[in-house]
Length: 143
Length: 180
Image (cartoon, rainbow over all chains, first blue to last red; front, top):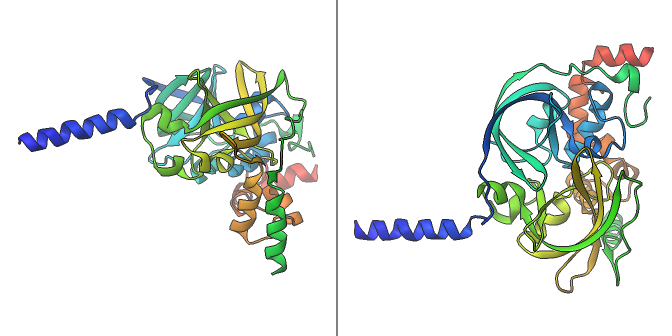
C-alpha cells in the first residue's frame, strides 16, 4: 500500500510537471451559431458567411485552417475538439457541418483574446440556413 | 524518376538560403509585419493538458507561445486555403523564429506564418510544406497544376461537394442557381 501510494504520488508529480503551467479553467457553455472558416471571417478577405462561402469554407477546413463557430451574439469560437475527436485539422465531422447553423454544448477556454471551444455534443444541426449566395455569388470568385 | 526529381526540386524551394525574405504584405485589414521568437505548442494541450506526441503530428491546431506567455494562434500559411499545422508540428516543443503577418479585425488579432526557422540557427523555410505533403498524399507532382489547385482536387472536398453541392444546399440547389 505504501508503494502504491508512493507510485501514485510520483505519477501525480510527473503529470503536474508535464502539464502546461498555463492550463486554463474552462467555462461551460451552450452556443448556437454558424460554423465558419476563421481566417476568412476574421480577416474579411472575402464575404465569409453562409451558402455563398460554403465551398471556400470546405477548402479551408480541408487545408487545416481552424474551423470556428460564430455565435448568434457575434462571439467567435475556435473549435479544438468535437466529441471524442481531438483532430482539429481537416476533421471530416467539422467539414460535414461547415456553414451549418448548430447548437453545441461544451467547454470554452479563454486565452489571449480567443475563445477556444471543446465541443462535447452537437445538440442540433439545422443545416445551412444563412442563404447568402443570391447576394454574394459563390465565393471567392463571386460566380 | 522524373516525378522524384521534380519533387526534389520542389522541396528545395521550401528552404530559403541565407536571410529570409521579409514578410510580404497581403493587404490585410490592420496588417502588421512581425518576426518573433516563440515555442511551438499544441493549443489543446496548452489549454487542457491533453498532450499527444509531436503535438498531434499535424492533426491539431498549433500556436506560438512567446516568452511573455502570450499564446499566438497561427491561422494561415503561405498556401492558398491552408493552415499552419503542417508547417510547425515538426518543431513541436521547440523554439522557432516566426515571420509573417498579424491582422487585427473584428476584435481578434490573427497571425499568418510566411517563414519559419528553428532557434538558434536553423535554415529559414517557407511556410508552404502543406503543398508538398498534399501532393505526396495524393500521388501527384507537387509542381503540377493539380497540386497548385489542390483545393479543387482534394478528395475530401470533392466528396462533400458531390454530396451537398457547392452551396451546401444539395445538388438541385446548385443546378437551379447556376442555371440562373
